[in-house]
Amino acid sequence: MDEQKKNMLSLIQPTNTPHLGNYLGAMRNWVKMQNEYNCFFGIADLHSITVRQDPVKLRAQIKESYALLIAAGLDPEKSVLFVQGHNPTHAELSWVLSCYTQFGELSRMTQFKDKSAKHPDNINAGLFTYPVLMAADILLYQANYVPVGQDQLQHLELARNIVQRFNGIYGDVFTMPEGYITKSTAKVMSLQEPTKKMSKSDENANASVWVLDDRDTIIRKFKRAVTDSETEICAREGKDGIINLMSIYSAATDKSFEEIEREFNGKGYGEFKLAVGEAVADMLAPMQSEFKRISADKSYVEQCMKDGAEKAYKFSRKTLSKVYKKVGFVTF
Ligand code: TYM
Image 1 (spheres, protein in one colour):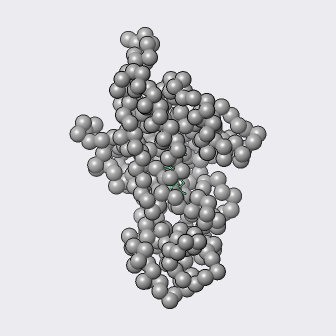
Image 2 (cartoon, helix red, strand yellow):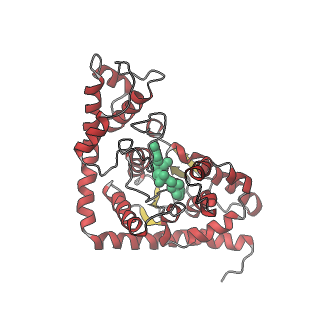
Image 3 (cartoon, protein in one colour):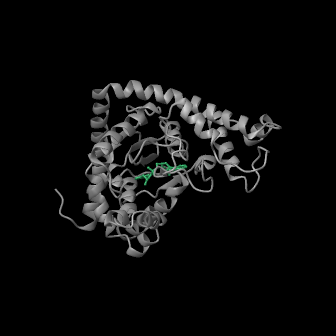
């Protein structure tokens, strides 16, 4: 850990293979951070069981998501890559913080409201206290920055309120975290309903592009992307589908919106969609082949997980001990 550097933390749920939104909104940005910050990145397995999971599938997805972090370019020697459930301090701090979080605050969380509406037969207490666990994730590592997509900002704001409240009582225990957002890809939209974010739980198979989709599938999904009845490729208001495709193309090729408008001036949507599909397939190809290579070496992935868990525990344990002392527990 380099004392001169600031800390960064972010996690991803292993509820499915990551999609293009997870990749562009989060994972890809993490890779760019690992030289500049002390980085902690991980798999939020504890969070994932707020919605029922098939145990066999979940176990496979945790391993897959972890290997994908490495395949995306995160170096386990530089960044601490860990699985949340391998480090007991997350659940421990979460309990303490839940006593410093108000019922009313949690009731206002839009994700809780959305997921409760989606799973009316399983509105469990974990779904309600989900943001407290997320605050624990962030605060344990004294994270200055939390690189996430826009959908996580409300949770981050709650974590900030908890810091203010806790530090207000006990002094400087936690670092105040800030969001770290890449504007153009903070919210990648569904390819089928471009006013809705791309989501892991979307039932429409053409709505999301999974990072392990093969080239033909990726291109086919982009060809079928919903746009509008006009013909012009530009970022005008109301053209949500085209704006989404332009943002994705821009992220995949590093071209600006002006360059894209020029490139496709006078060309049709069909040609543009094909170009976006090809660019995305090209962008994901190196990660896909790295994934194949890494996941074939099961003992390497397992060793990385063990090392990551140890490093994560070593750091977070210090924060937890400080918290226990501050609130008045007997510690040795
Ligand atoms: P999760 O697993 O839903 O998503 C992982 C990351 O991907 C971002 N994201 C998106 N970005 C752009 N466009 C989209 N359509 C899109 N969909 C998702 C998310 O914002 C996130 O950054 N609660 C978190 C996991 C978590 C966490 C944490 C994050 C647990 N503890 C502590 C940060 C810090 C979640 O469910 O992310």
